[in-house]
Image 1 (spheres, rainbow, N blue to C red):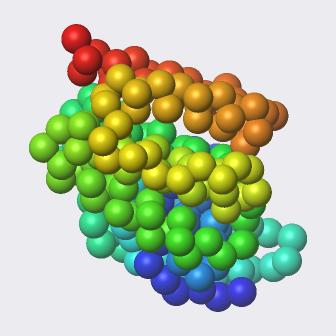
Image 2: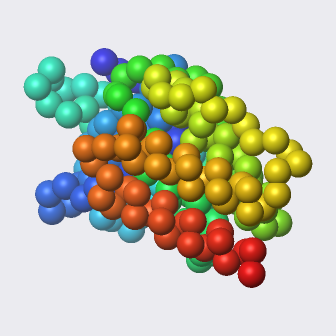
Length: 201
């Protein structure tokens, strides 16, 4: 398989001395895993940030080998890494996507929703401007993979009710989507929820 597409970089894991394995969400081919040679080099470090939009070219070498990929940066989330709430939101949304979706299944609606959520996290004036979109993205992901029928929270819902909804939804995600691999992924959600709760005070 050879593939060229825009993609959302969802996870990066060091592999070997110089490379990395990435998971990228594309609109038409879904989640794709690939090996990036030279990932620790100066040129690629700012590209390999979860949440970045990249132009990816994936080439399969052999059926038994992981494809290799070349990435070009389209949109960077790097400027928001120093903002605790924005960084937490980006980290959780991308890690959830990488851990929960099967590879190679198209999820066009999830691709569009994740791209919109990441834009909202980066450009809303505060977390109050994107927390509702996060709830909606989680609910959509649960629906797309066959768990639950929850929709977007009502616009009149208070902040405390929204946090309660995130708590309930988190239990569904942990028990259903990530039952076998909660570990670090749900840990990211715990950190994010702690930060969001502080907004109430």
